[in-house]
Length: 112
Image 1 (cartoon, rainbow, N blue to C red):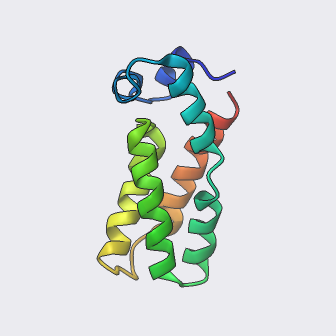
Image 2: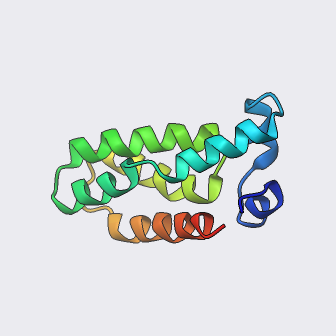
């Protein structure tokens, strides 16, 4: 079960997330649950692997905003790196490493 304490243990900035949700814990946790199921996670990997960096940027940018809004900084950190590399159209960036970091952190959260 997702709780504020469990999110904190995994590196989420729950204080900031709660502030953005007017300190409504139930609303915040509902948004976190929705965020963890976002289809853009899979789409991001698929687009990068297919070399479709423009579409990958759209997914990464959407994820960056959503993760920032709920302050899931442990997942947001690699997504920010991916987003900025895609914004710069960096074809030599180590997307695979960042995707792995993102997915590892995401799975930790989903396991709650």
